[in-house]
Amino acid sequence: YRNATSSLLSSTDDNIYENNNNSTAVEPIHGAILFGRSRDRMDRLVIENEEPIYYTSVQPRKLKKNYTSPYQHHITITDLKPQMTYFYRIILRNTREELKELECRIVQNSTSIEEEATNILEKEKETELNTAEESGRRLLSPKAHHRQSRIILKDIYLRSNSGHRRLAPPPYDSTQCACPDPDKIRHFRTISRAGHGKTVLAVIGDIGQFPHSEETLDHLRLNHQHRIDAIILTGDLAYPELDHRRWDTFMDLFDDYPLIEYIPMHITPGNHDIDKPEHGNNIFSAFEVRFRMPRIQEAQLGTYNGEESELNMDSPPYPLDYEYGNAYYAFQFGKTHQIYLNSYSSLDPGSKQYEWLLTELESVNRRVTPWLLLTYHVPIYNTFEVHQKDIQMFKMREHIEPLMVKYKVNIVFNGHIHAYQRTKPVAMGNVTSTGPIHIVMGAGGRNADAAFLQDQPEDWIVMRDGTIYGYGLLEIINKTHARWDWVHTGQKGDHNKVHHHPNITLPMGGADHAFFVNQYYL
Image (cartoon, rainbow, N blue to C red; front, side, top):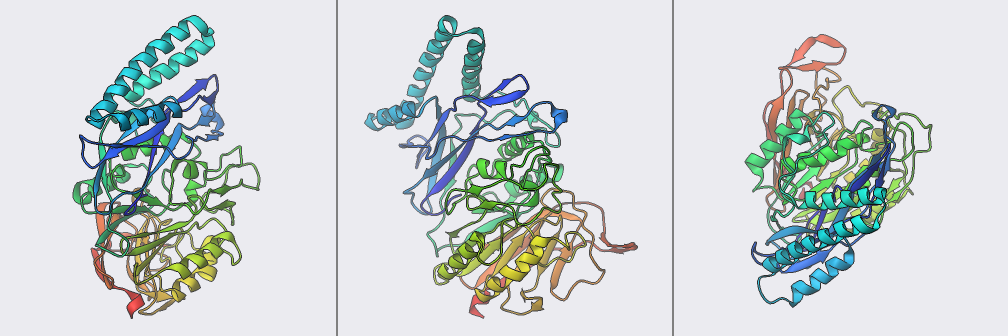
């Protein structure tokens, strides 16, 4: 997450210790960000704001051992200048005290801070390894010595730029690329202050880690990486399918197509992000621990109260016990006020999410942020055969759509259906110039195979297609006008299908480019 004056950076270290059939976390490596306005003078060190965190999950029995995630580090940088490029580097140390000592030594040094920081780290690394090796030989038991050696080797691995990943469950083979250089200097650029400048958002849904996922990310990186200000993922991120190692390879995917190291990404939970294990009741563990959005407050994350068996992710129960955290949140971004909801938390009046949303909508200042965007996973307008009976759709239509219409939400982004759809401005099923525009962007990578419910499109449909992979680009030009582009990156088949009518074939969707007029001013 990033806005004009602050940036929230998240990173992973792979510091876990495997013991027999279980994975047990060892003491975490602590993190900081060294950053500044030029590569050769990064003069601020920000130590992580919260303790490194991890989670565990019961894996399917066929994998023979359970899962412990790497430690996740979340660091917030504040007091940034708008429209400014910053360079940064990840710093890892064994203890928070070492980071604080390093911070003091950097502040006291009057020469090149980046050079001094590098020298300090290299000298302390050498001393640390020598001391640890000597301690391991003299004082530790064989088992503890093995554990200490693992930590030492992991430290070397983290600082090496030649390591290769060891874990690659299908579908994404992350061993094909080397690990990113841990000393790599990255950069990001802050946006304009709220209410100023143009904003370009890339919208991707149901991305997963499939061949078409790579096509989508590569196309976005090669053609628009210097143009976009943020990426929106409309849910269903990693598709772990009960195997949490796939969350690791999903993060590897974004290392191999490095967009989010300098472009902020905002997420909303999908049904495949629930992640309830077959033998256990934890939910949304990876989604909450691995990411850090601009949260209202810490997550209130409960467990699934039903039977301890595999959950049907295509028809999850309602509601699930997940409040705040990454579940729902809002922020200002350029001329937009963006609100992200959780389709799977309670949407009923009186619920925490509903009452928060009502307060948030009341607070929107359209003179500062004239464009109001809403993102959640399950669409309430659906021209396709799949997901026509989702209870979340009916709850959203009953309780949330009246609020969208009342507060003149401009655009609603959804995923869930592995297809593309754009509506006319519509309110309560009726086409009207002041209603929100609903866009399903669900063919970012997962199999695009949704059939139409009927051969003739509904009155509120502008464009629909179930064969083409891609993403969307929304450019906020000024307070009254925006441009939308549906970008194609691949395709499956050469025609659209109609449910229960195998003999009917319809042509693929064409280009979809449009200018939107802000409904608030109509």
